[in-house]
Image (tube, rainbow, N blue to C red):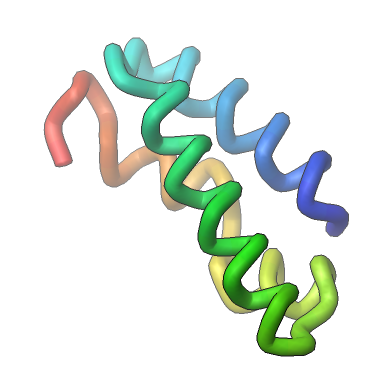
Length: 65
């Protein structure tokens, strides 16, 4: 999965869960991609290591981390 696909799915899942600071969460993961890509990892490797956007979003459900 590409970075843009991953981040779009993450934003969608966060919005479904009514996470108030969804944009901040997505921004954090966007930075994570930038740092890891600078270290030589591909977008696909990074997204695979992070796991499912739905699973990640579930951690923030209802604005609770």
